[in-house]
Image (cartoon, rainbow, N blue to C red):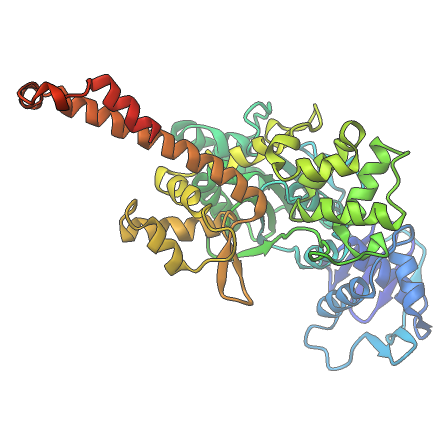
Length: 498
């Protein structure tokens, strides 16, 4: 077992653990690989190419990913130290400055903790594209406390969380995964019962969950917290307060809204701007994902020609860079072709309706994915979202109030507007200070507005019928001259036609 000793640190290369004065230090797997390369060749200058090859041997990443992990390492190693253990050599790379002593013997100290994967942690079957730098950064921040990955449906929160868990799991004694949103998942652990059970069952399970994690360095991944946001917030906050060694990584379409929560917003993949020509697919992560998924389902439909790249660029533009929408679009190329696919994406909810049979129902179609968010809204939020679909471009809060005013009280409007922003259904443009509906959400909301208007129209007609059937109204109607009488049924039909 190879051990590297430097300053007050002890680095176990086989067990992939790092100790400082006997206490375990948590760093991500990429950061660990970088530290291993630097400390193993202490005093030498390692180029950025060498370091990138050490941490990402089979993946092309931007130089910024290297910088992010170097910053995380310095934060873990240097603390209040006056001299950095990792120094930058201008124009050449980085060097490890501390003397390093090697030990190959078995240690008498307590061995590094072995990860016990108590709950099944899914493994991503598809290559995660366009998220390397972000995952490295967020993984370097994982430690005690609560981190919540927030974003709209289909944006890739679960995939990112699973990748982060894989990168940092060696720093924990236990790793647990629970899909809060999957009611069909059979899980009788105290934590699962506390999150899903009724109040009577949850009380005992909650205390059992706290006791089962007591004193352990535990990583818990909670996926889909939006389905039970209040209960998740209560359970997560209490567990973090009572166990200082616990780390909780949650995914949700809105923040948990608790003290000490680190909220990390996950946005769409990069896409070309309107009319922008594309010479390299890898220049935009949205196009890179589309090309990768297209190669799986339609190998003979290449997009490496200028015309093909132009078509692919237009397709990903119409998906807003949403990874789920991009993958669903790629799955339709075989039966529609690129040109027809572009035309059909004017109504993406109708086109992007065929996903993986094994996915959670909320991820099988684009409509089902948005339905999941919509069904969690209250009536005021549903009404506001539907009416906001009349804006085809950016709008201000005042614009929204002027449009919805007749339908909501001012207090209800303010609360509902803020809640839709928090739930990632309304997006704020930080540059302009305005808001907009993502394209996919906008189409869905317009459908809901049409259904609202139909219901309201039918309700108006029924109210009119009820009034006309009142005895006093009937007597007044019957007393009118025959020349101006119109049958009641014709009046109702005419109103609907108008």
